[in-house]
Image (cartoon, rainbow, N blue to C red; front, side):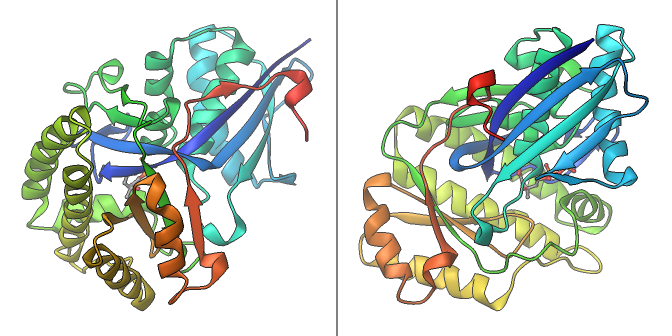
Length: 332
Ligand code: DP6
């Protein structure tokens, strides 16, 4: 017998960053974070639970993945199998939709799509809040991809896994957009997982980072409530810079920046000085993301094209939360 689940999840970019776990096994973060879900980047995933399989199989973009990659999927699926009290193995097929130049293939959309598909295949029918605590166990940032718009990942209490979940904050339907400036699309040399662990262990600035992220989150939620774009942007830029500053304080220091990251940041500042509000944020890689008003995107793109190639500039609107995909809409 087979049971099928199919789900689409969009990736998200943190405006208040998550950079460190207080419990590595359970993926419990040091601070709460807040993100924007993006329309242009997503993962479609199918899970087929099949009694005839002896082990899980995992295809990414039609390429069969190694035992090592598949083992991560198995570990994740076991969380659902344990709850559903089943042992059935699965064939998982995932398709990443990321403009080729973006270099944004993301564990956030991957694990939230897998969580959504497995939830359907097992018939567990977990609600989104509970499902976000499962997605979290694949990759922290996946917690936030369950919902669209602005999403908080509440850090939770102590070692209680159920208490650390996503909360939809606002649908961001008030003229919000993002432009990705793809600086280098190669695979990053140091994963976020390793980078954050090293930062906690060695950066003397780490406790200040946690304090400042916590107060930034309170201010940002207030700005979102007021639909105050300027304050939202200012806190976004400041928070991202503080995360990178904390990494620079590690020993040996961590930097994901490249010369073109600095060029992009300077250009955005220049554009802002012409009177168009736009703000940068960066994650564990050299690409620069620009938070802006959707209605200013064309103007900003035109100005960025003075210094960057067409393929490097990827505009996106605000994305929605996870969606199940029907038989007829599964086009792979
Ligand atoms: C800089 O979610 O990729 O993008 O939980 O170890 O899988 P793991 O890390 P991951 O880290 C994301 C870090 C970040 C900031 C953020 O998304 O909040």
